[in-house]
Length: 294
Image 1 (spheres, rainbow, N blue to C red):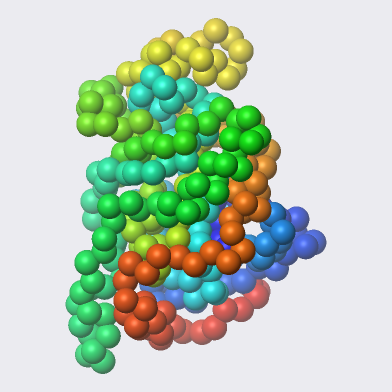
Image 2: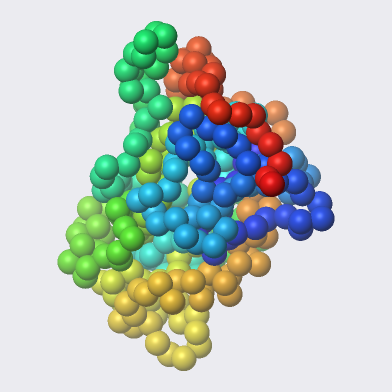
């Protein structure tokens, strides 16, 4: 299993019981070293999406490098965590969401491993079937595990993925809600489709930190996470998001552990791309092998 940590989640294991590796990839460096340890009774590889010091903005993340590295280490499933804004009244700050759909509004990000035949005949074009981007079996396991804990949970949700790093205008936030979105985020695409291209199952746990641009006031009122009566017309800021993520980190890590523990030991991901084509991608030459960091 693998875990990709979103904003605010920069480590997952105690340093004394884990091992970190720098993984060379054909697509450049990963966002952070890959740390391997035990979580939920399973061997888990972890990396943090924005770097260990949150220095990588969403449009410059090496999504292909991150996904390729985890697949090359033998991962078959990815549990990803995301900080999201709520753009629907039913997705209040403080709510956990097991996302089932996304709308991609990003641009300019390398979003496929299959860019046409190369000189050696590898890399043929592949058309990914992405109607259900998050693995149904993994989602069922996650929902059952989190429901049993009594968390404030939405068992489905559509996330609109924006380019970032800026937050939405009020008009954009309202538009997203009218388009059927429940939450907004900056990183699910192309991360999720890239994982699917390497036949990795994915399940996403989102944590609603805010009411986005204040266009969903009904959602903000129950999410008075600061206890000061604010939130009716709350407008998102980086400081607000990071503060609430820091406060919620123990709950987020505990929820991820519950999901990992619940995932079936005999899990077999869907084959959405021919296995031979995936093997070609994973066989692309790199400058070195996985190695401990200096």
